[in-house]
Length: 221
Image (cartoon, rainbow, N blue to C red; front, side, top):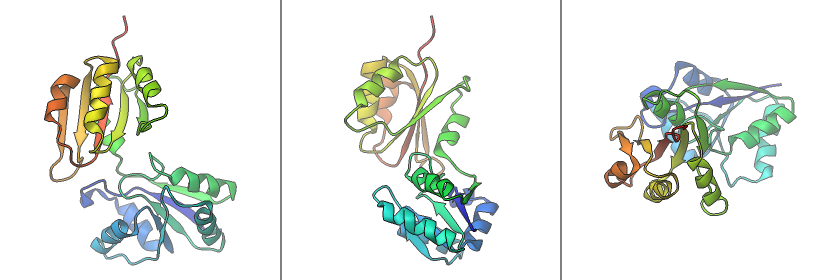
């Protein structure tokens, strides 16, 4: 039986793709991707031509079954997301779980992750951090914010440009004026890193691009 390859792709700078990722994308039979248009741009940049299957958060179970059937039939499939590592705050785990249930070999092809990128340059000494991804938009959001306020370890969050100021305002209200590290457009031309208390960072934020936020935990007494 063939395999499912979970391939990390650049979050901005195309030079960050690994040699192994390129080799894998060239060798597989099919690529399952979040947005076929974005993946096609990546493939065209590196001169790779492969059939694409759309697989995203709105895909129905039939799409999962289609991809699993493709692998069982003898074709290798690579799973990619628009940017970064599949399965990290995206629907990749649904397909990965289905592959395991079908006794399909799942192979990680590691590479860029916004999570690791921001932690690596954060200056936060505590290596014991908690990753929460995107907070719920409505139901359960306040509960999560209250939980973050009680954390003594750093918490890492993802956020969109449309909600970043709302998130920081909510954190300021719930956690107090905690120290944060905010990365905007990591690895891209206009990458910015904001550091300081929430009240200092909030006025500086430009509501463009994707964001990663580290909230330092409250000091234990």
